[in-house]
Image (cartoon, rainbow, N blue to C red; front, side, top):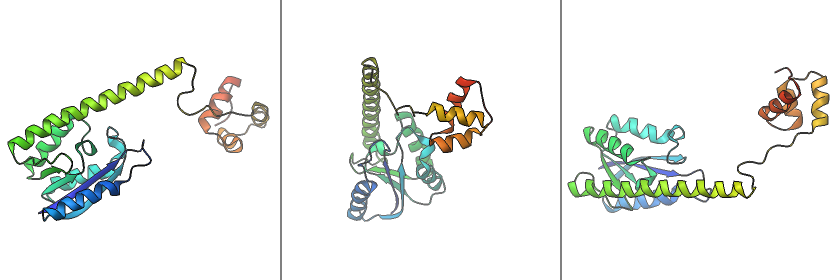
Length: 197
């Protein structure tokens, strides 16, 4: 049977490698005598659908029936939420495209497989929400302790900036000279009463 493989690594964890997932997927396909016709790989967080170009391409190809099934290493590599999983699997069912997860060993063509898939999908979503809440709580606690959250604010040489404003340089030219973003320069210039773009 012709299968598509999908792997996704989060941009938050630089140590992840898609090859780890793909090796397990290839091994499963070989063991079950399936052919992988294409591998799709994304570098994005689960919820960042805009950066998941390969996932969107896979969805288009599934609708065109270019393969008979999709293999992923784990459920959370593919779906953003339980609702997303239901909608996707329903559309694949209409296109006669199956789904298999190597880690959870699901087969969506059986009632038991669909039940187990729904249960684990719910648990995965719950875990994701718990992690998100813990991260937010940790950031709030760090902020209360006076720690910098996010990137440190870029420092601008005010004396040099004042000279550039007097020379009527553009925001772009000032940003290039000061080696900071245009946004940083715009904020500083606004404090001083404006300058050209």
